[in-house]
Length: 367
Ligand code: ADP
Ligand code: MG
Image (cartoon, rainbow, N blue to C red):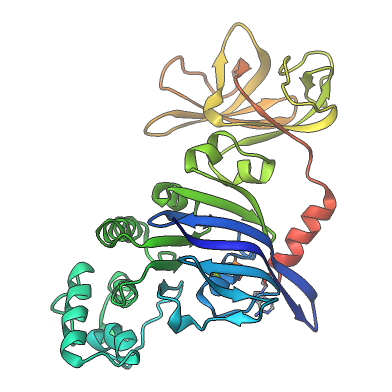
């Protein structure tokens, strides 16, 4: 069953200084019950706005939203269900705990709003605290607790209502890396236990890939691609998605009759069987471990730098004035300054990004 459905959802903001920004553009999306789904994209791409519309904190400029099969927001039919009636749990980026309430009172708050009997509140809060490893801290105040504990209060307050859907807006971004990892694990554990549907918003690709069943990558208000982490990593539909997931080299090339040349060397192709229907200026995208180095054949280049990493050796290579990063196993080592030959497997090919796109991206990031 589809738990969350967005149809043609659009949201524009108009401000005096900046004119109209289309924060979310024609979003179409279905998320299944029990799925852990991530929104990934750079700052300003519309992630929070989308989440706020699903939660009911923001009306729509166009389109409709269904939760559990029920129409909750529809611009044309003038339907709008307020947030407290949407059966959602939410955790937002900043530690959204109330400093003047102790841990128990913070977590009990959503149940008090619903006027549940106090014995029931007590039982449910204790259970939520236990699940978030906060038992024993009922009477503590947030200011006396660590960042991780404060974020767990927010998590406990979200699960205490037994939500069908959990909306998490960069909930881990204020935590140090070690804590992030263990909170990620906690979130997955709670999801397995309670079976809620999760939308997890992040600009951190590793986090999205580790947590999600499926995810989407968005840019400037539009969905670029929806799929499993593996599909998006292995078969990105465009340069933006490619650049957002994992490390890559983007090399300027000129394509002529299915052969790709570096602009400074139109005599020898760097790759001679381009699969994409492109001609002229284009971009070749390679993952650092899709290029291998050898001393006898391939495209001539020079090692400029070598760095030992724990699991591989990383080289910086200069090929006709363009820098490429290459990662190889710890054998057949090359020295900095040495000549080498490159062979590239399975590059991806993209058109060059045009300047209008670059300008729009800059404009949104300065708002
Ligand atoms: P993200 O969460 O991906 O960083 P947001 O959804 O917060 O992005 O913002 C998307 C775009 O909408 C940005 O350009 C932002 O400046 C704009 N925006 C968001 N909220 C408002 C608002 N209340 N008024 C005007 N512009 C807004
Ligand atoms: Mg945001």
